[in-house]
Length: 466
Ligand code: GLU
Image (cartoon, rainbow, N blue to C red; front, top):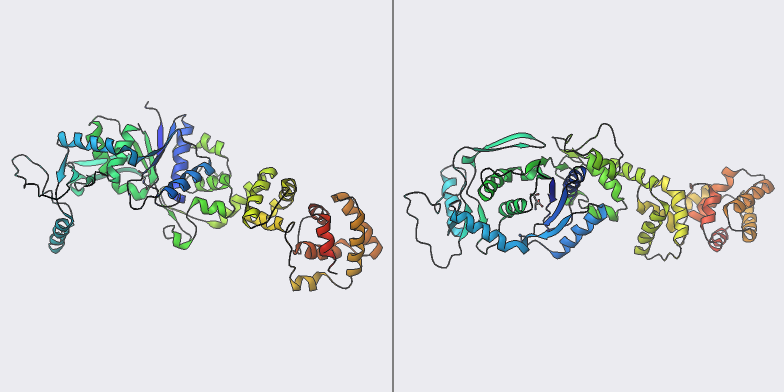
């Protein structure tokens, strides 16, 4: 069997889109599952729209997701010579030809076709044929190279996701494969690359399904009629919550945006994987399980719908399982970005252990942790509801005792018990008042553990308000 080689081929015209990330994940997991190789290719031939920043963003997002590649990044713009060479070979073999039509001529051609009620198409005026007399090439026009698509028969493949697909060649135009400036078009560069890079399986979004017949025909012309083609699998698009195509205008669509919103890479991978693929009823799985299970089967044929609530749930599950020291690092990054200086990650790790069960994202965890370092502003209604005249003497007493105790959870707990006994109060009367004053939240995990996270001075200062 041909060795398994997959690729992801993003265009650097924006951030790594969630759909591309999902395809990357499937391609990566499929290669890893089979002990094959995964190639990263940057399709930067759209010179006007490609940027270095996007390339950097895409590589960064791939690294963050942990989708490591065995080859690449390979930039198409560094392979121009190769595309030109293959185009010349196709011309020499009669499988491609130069076309000197100007944009104005092409417009006029389409106009006439429309007026006749025909579907617009290239009319083949520069396509050589036995006995056909071609016009003399006009001066001053840079010709493009067109692929001479077979005019009869059909092109068919057994799509790994959608099943058998077949298109009549009559439906397929003679595509421009090399522009006048010598830069290849997408469908040509992809074929030369997939062939040169010995790609065995192409997983991609189904917006490319219409390109596949061209690619198969070009592939056969480039590699020979008997060449083993890659197998193609087209995954349905991801729909937004509103049932429309996931779009920037209606929410975050880039992987990087989710990192900034406080999602963990393992949660993103888990959620993206499930969006269009299943392994029984499993909802939570690791990268290793994905590699073990992903053999290209059980991919959904119909579009999946983006579900922020489910993503949040998946993230919360992974947050609970995440190592506290790692969360401390991530929370610290968030806090530093907010201008909060954090000297000590050990405290953040203890805070993570205490708060992570209540949080959905790292951002929320940072919201909780911030109270350790920045002043809090209790809401007037919380103060009115919980810091009553009845508990104020107990709070003052507690403050005095807390000034003296060894600063740890047990000693703080004992001081609390002593105050409750002395003032004949119950914990549910005192704890909410403490929470509101110190944390500006009426609910927290066990108050002695929470207080122990703070610097003593901070607690004393916040209690001094009563
Ligand atoms: N550059 C294409 C894209 O970003 C890749 C399509 C393919 O995988 O062939 O959509």
